[in-house]
Image 1: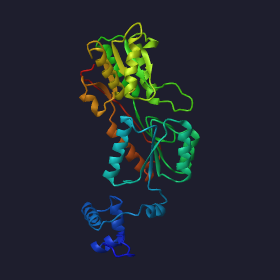
Image 2: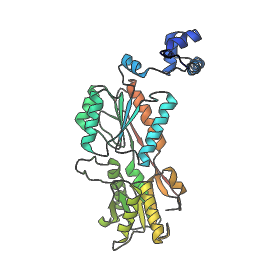
Image 3: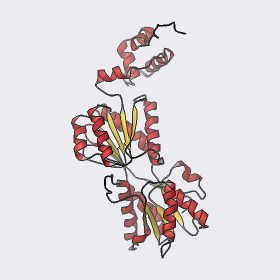
Image 4: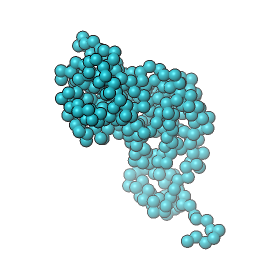
Length: 349
């Protein structure tokens, strides 16, 4: 126990260097994961740092480097499995690389356009982040120009803009794969559950929803099939209950669907499956169902859900690595990665 008034001594990089009889700069580089340092030497330094209970002074480091030692991660909300899974893998990558371990700052905009822009301006003016990652949303063009001028990189997931790095999913291709699978199985009245595809007042348009609807339409048109306008149900919150309500709405229509493509995600599709079970509708006998995302629970449903798989863990990892590359000045021009999703066939379709 410390004596009253006595301060606990903080271990510094110099203390570690003195203990190991090596240079201050070598210790500093090793703790910053600089590949210049020999692997065995770096391991020995990190082991000693742990034994001596070394904690980096992030504030001081930030002042020296002119950095905030934080990455802002912004999305509409974090309750949705797609978003939370991407954020989780983003965080795991930080721990794996030992970069920004305690410096990931998540922000939710609740999909409010003005709130998003105010947040971005505050981040920029207060120098709150070394990079900004935006999932399913994007900044206004003038805001992005301000970030570029300040040399704060912006990484977009599910969107792309000139002046920003991006990771996008070929959502149109994923939707076409799903609908073609249903058509190949003899389904001809395929209902679509989709997020908002029109620009709502004061809210961001969902680029993924727009692309998935295009895929649904394209799959039909390539076979000369007519799409019924009343075969589309639009949802807003991407929650379980919306799936149940959407199925009820489909069943009120003159011609009931023999399949449903839930482009709004697996969680909404789960609501469809539960409501179908309550109503005695056999899946896939009476109605086939396909979701989108391939969340962990999808394979454990009854029946297991056929779905379009997005590599959620890979997306978070790639986004983190892209942010680090941009912060370190390794990206001299926009880096744009496009992922082609995979159809995972299970018993629901």
